[in-house]
Length: 241
Image (cartoon, rainbow, N blue to C red; front, side):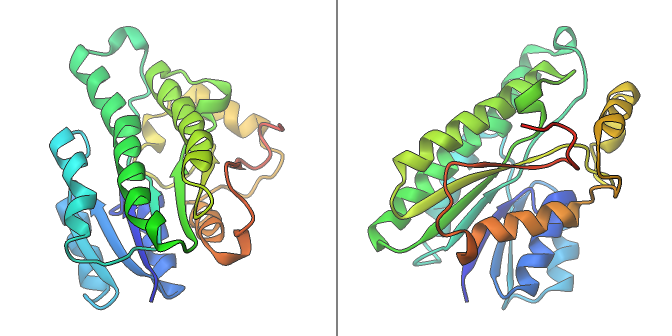
């Protein structure tokens, strides 16, 4: 049974990815600061397929210790999904210094450390491994939340660089969602921005977390073994590249 780490596992895209990964036969290591959300997942899925870790990725001590502690229990892990993130949906002028530090840490620094720590331990196995990072269309076309957009643009750049850094054994790809319904941040997105997304979508079936999860699992799997360093949009065609 292949083992898979998913951060931000308790809700939204993360939870949908946990559920689909287990359905597809993965053993999932789920991390989130939402202890209650993890408890729900633990109740749905037994310890033979799901392992929960309460982790606040705004804390650098947690970030730096997370992967090393996992490898005290697991000899090898197949994949890493860097999904945990913060979105405030507000002007750059409204950010406090503390909030700036927090969003940079959760949305970017955590990915730097988790990715390199994972790759460092898996590359010696000389076997195919996979990292999928969750960015956003905001990292490609901009955002009303400048800090969010900046961090997601950085995630794309980091992913492309790490596709080189971790080759030939660890693939690194990016999923770039647009407007995702039924998530915690949906209501935080300003109404005018939601209307803009909806206006530009050429496919009209609303994007749900499960739809993004399907793309994540596809990128992780063997069918995409020749793909690395790519940004895969999940945006209903709203932003043709």
